[in-house]
Image (cartoon, rainbow, N blue to C red; front, side, top):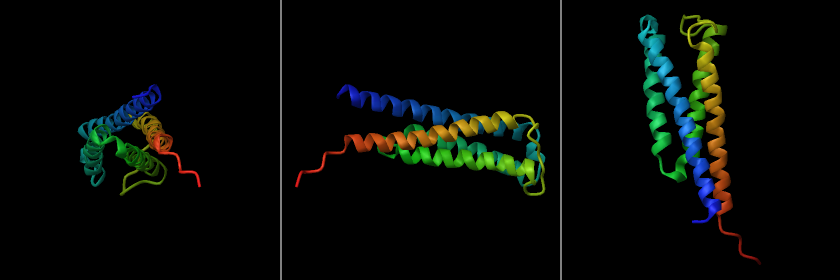
Length: 143
């Protein structure tokens, strides 16, 4: 293995771990909020629990999928984190499923930061994986 491939692999692993950590942190925040009172809110409570379980499953997938699928896993993680952040914004701005929250609610700002950074990392993982594939592709045959 060449030094170049080793660094590509190292960066890919680091990005996968970072994306999984963001997904896990977002899931932990949501399960904590669910446990401390959001479970009593119709529709929102079950959605918080679903987000927590789905986030942990996706975090494990990001860590364990074969390397060739890591870009897709990064995109899935980014999409999941963006949709979670969108839920917070919708809830704070106009309300969601009959519930209006606030940016000053416990963990709301931390959650938005974790999800925003995690989404950027997921996009970076997808881009990095794509670039690594391009750099390792065989050169085209001259005509």
